[in-house]
Image 1 (cartoon, rainbow, N blue to C red):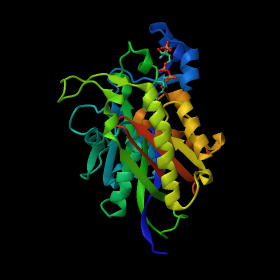
Image 2 (cartoon, rainbow, N blue to C red):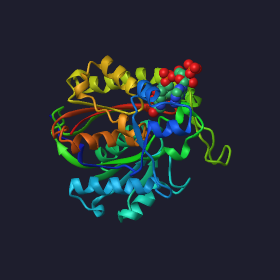
Image 3 (cartoon, rainbow, N blue to C red):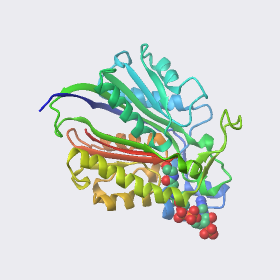
Image 4 (tube, rainbow, N blue to C red):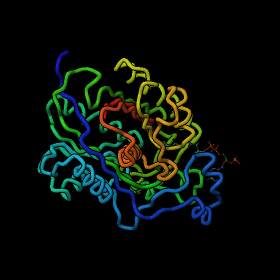
Length: 326
Ligand code: UT7
């Protein structure tokens, strides 16, 4: 076997705003019910950032926990990626605010915008930069304050999302070049802009000069989500020569428990090996996958050496899947 550089996970961390908003609380403000939301989405509650609690603040807190678990100081980091669609400011990159706050020395730091697929995209980019020798210790964060983009009068969307952040530390490691290696083993990212208006924000600096509000054609998104996640998940598994059913964990983007169940069923992955956090967090976009990974580790369920299949889709549509050995 030819030895090769791998991006291995050295630590995971998460941060959720303190404020819990239940379905019943939303039902006091808009025409909805706990029963409808739970039945159609699996969501019971979500966290909402406090006034002044920014995406970068959540990102920094998640990053500190991931660094502590990796036993690394911020000074060791030489690549910082923040996957977000809710940056603190239009520019500069939220990653540079995180870099300043953590005291990470001059190194590449940038935001990556692929909405709910953002974390899969960011891991794929970090993996490529590590394997080509551009970085040795990367901090990859998914952080969002989607509550700031919601139309709180639109019951079809405002009940679906929440705020939060999660982070992974990846380290470069020379390994054997086989499927037994720890780290990212295969990744596939894609987008299809023909679906631009199925899920988008109706504002922005160069279109309206306003921040805008989230708009979604839920049924279309649902349909594409199941197909795209299933197909890209199958492809990355094929690349490492194992069927999806051999994965120890499936950690999908958390938008709707019905989407998660439909994809897991098609991939023949039993429910006990599927991470579900949408009930407590709702859809936190780019943060949902690292938040779910953090939960598995904190509960002692995800162990070193286990195979993890991650998959996500969001606006664009942009989507992708990745297999890693923890
Ligand atoms: O991260 C990727 C982004 N997002 C997603 O993956 C979301 C994908 N889509 C979905 O999860 C689902 O399509 C939704 C949860 C958004 C909607 O579920 P659905 O089963 O497709 O419902 P629907 O949109 O077809 O609406 C059914 C009914 C409608 O009433 P009528 O026209 O049948 O009388 C809606 O007005 O449910 C109504 N409705 C609600 N009722 C109570 C829509 N939202 C609500 C609500 N409370 N919050």
